[in-house]
Length: 357
Image 1 (cartoon, rainbow, N blue to C red):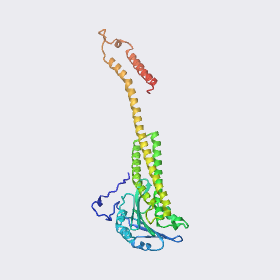
Image 2 (cartoon, rainbow, N blue to C red; image 1 turned 45 degrees about the vertical axis):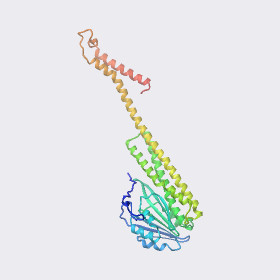
Image 3 (cartoon, rainbow, N blue to C red; image 1 turned 30 degrees about the vertical axis):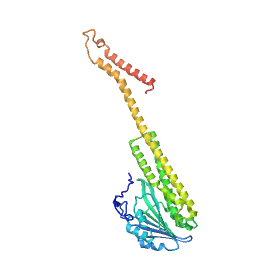
């Protein structure tokens, strides 16, 4: 089962702005991908050194610098220092357990959010931090591989809106792409929930309970990842910072509505999973009731039969007129079994008429 909690206890007692990596230990070298473009031209390059991307700050192009590997704290610090990123934002970039947030320092807007990817092991979470200013967008993620290829494809095509827009629109496009992927995650959860519900209605097993708890954990994690994003989208939608053009508020308003819709869907699916759990418990209880009913019927039938067997098992002889006369019958044994059969059959008929069976 995927674990979603990341320990941050190692930062206890440190001063604000201490850039300390919090997250999974990684050894692979970080990769810097740069897409620099104008309405008519585009260039794409990859680097391994922070100094190679310094030249993109002051040129006339809009540059998207994507850093995969925030475990390399020194590289993150070099890039952020060159682009004038505040120390508190740098601290947030390397803290992969950070709650989604929005911040604004020194003409640099900062947004952090969770990028979610569904695979065979469950929902994988990765923090994406976005810092954008005049003429550049910096994005930081924990490892290579993301859901941002649609944005890259839009930039590569001529005459697309993103080629003519400023950094605020590019930042919006990146955030919107991450949020749109939440829908795919929720669709996966919904399909699994419906399949599990159909399975429970046919035949519930103990493994179904494990699947239910996995779904509950995933939805709880989704809520934790998406719920704070409502505040972030609200801050961007209000557009109270100079970097966001007034004409672009409509896009951030659309982003805000998408986030609200995702939150609503998470609430609905949490109720669905709760309903599935109720179905499972009802199924188990009903199956137990059926078993208990059968055992009760069997016990009820054998109570009078046990009484008869006990009476005729006393083996009193016929020396006294008050002893058991049936012991002297020629067909006494046969008479006993006929009596047992009649009593048992009579009880079964009675249970049928009472609709207890």
